Length: 307
Image (cartoon, rainbow, N blue to C red; front, side, top):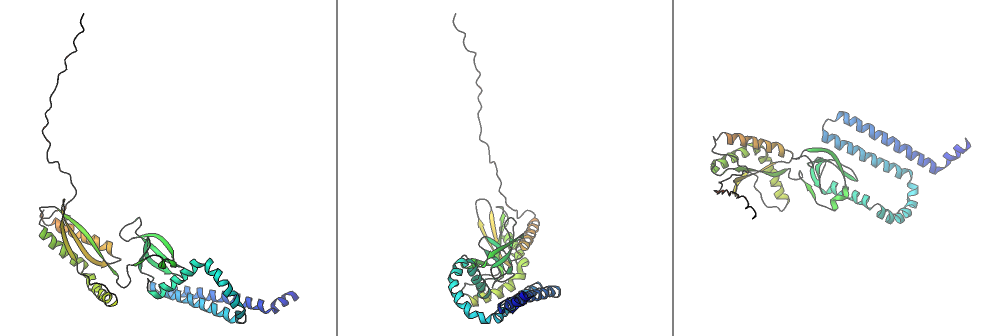
């Protein structure tokens, strides 16, 4: 009993005990508040931001608690921390770079949660940004047309200082996409162009107005040349067929859906032309076989040997 009294009479022990208890209480309160918000906030984006805000508030009060409890020790720790700073910087340089990357991402506008990005060879949607890592839901890889693979990739935030960061949904949440349509020689290519132009305008008109507004913002913000937002159909003639290229602007998340809709409409429209417009494909045609002369030589029996 006397040993326990001596233990608690030590001011350092009391401070450590209070710090531990205070951190436990703050952690429990943060978890309770986060679970409560998850239950009552239905909007996904708002719920994510609220949970992140509560987490950072918990970090702030934890740091404030430690400063208040150990304020008399801070002066003595300053010399120790200054001596250890160099060693810590070398040993934890990757961690420090990741924290610096987090600051750059948060205040530099590299990307936000919900953006579609490509970091190196990893492409996907950002689902979380922590102090050290960015979490991405991967797309493409072994599946096509911007579909999720199901893999979650965690990338160190220091990556933003080492390689380009591609953002598909930053200031301009649209991308230019295109399809190619091969048409046989002898088809009515003038009518084919008209059909393709009409179809692409009808299918993608929902993006043109919003894309024009965002592109005007890009022109005011950056030194970038003006570009054509409206769909464009161009033609080239090669050795095999007439090839149309249909270029259009589309929401970065709807490329596959729009491409499917375009090809469906084009197939239906070409089928209704009664053969005036026909798709081309790689075929091999034998033009003719040269005449061959076959001569049969009858073998004579070998002569009999002389007697």
